[in-house]
Image (tube, rainbow, N blue to C red):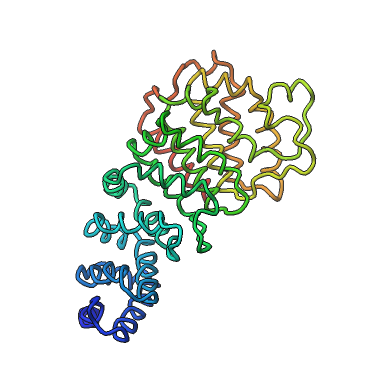
Length: 359
């Protein structure tokens, strides 16, 4: 700790370039371990200097400073320290870098913004700062949807998980589901994005979080958004269905052909199934899913998850959704499953089972 305090003076923007460079290299090295991040997180003056160096005149200093923030914010201790002390400075800096199509550090800045919004307890603070910037969410969505927005080979893929993180909050979900801005419809096509699993996973994570809010289910399943094809298409494979089944399916899933590939990442498949499970909360949602061939698609997915290529945790989630869809509404006996009062002992058993399934 004492050594960190000693080098803090050399991390000032006014310090000599060579001293800044050496000191910052030392800090960057420390951020490669949890213990190092924990130590640095307890040095507010050092943190303040590193944040300041993100705007240094020298390219190499700016780069190492931002990379240090990427590593620091990857751990909750570091993210909490940065948000609690510097949110009002960090968020606008990250936003400006992302919006600058010629910024060479747009990608690491998008990672910083993503990392500090990952812990649920920090989401509101990040949203507070973003909401101070006029049309920030709309403009970030534009950056995300224009794949070649950054002219310095920045990909901005981490805006995907950023949107997913922000949708943990009711305020975040509300702005993304605002019918006037239409942000959700602009992001949804990226659940099929082949170029980046980070971008694709972020879009799916956002979709899953939105589906947790049953008050928007009618809108999600209606013609304005129609999320079902976005959920079913990635989990569908090259299976052939008879004409009657194809007629039930959304147009996007009809006659896919032998070259159709199923989503390779099990975590993404699981999130898509969890989205379906949430849409099963209401009777109207369940009936709609049955009418659109959801069971038939999941029946084939179940076969895949039972094969050596499949994953047990995805299989269990698939079975949970199928178990709801194959029941009659008389058997279910409840219009809205989220309205049910579940006893505490049953909740603890479910959580224990979920933990075992993750292993």
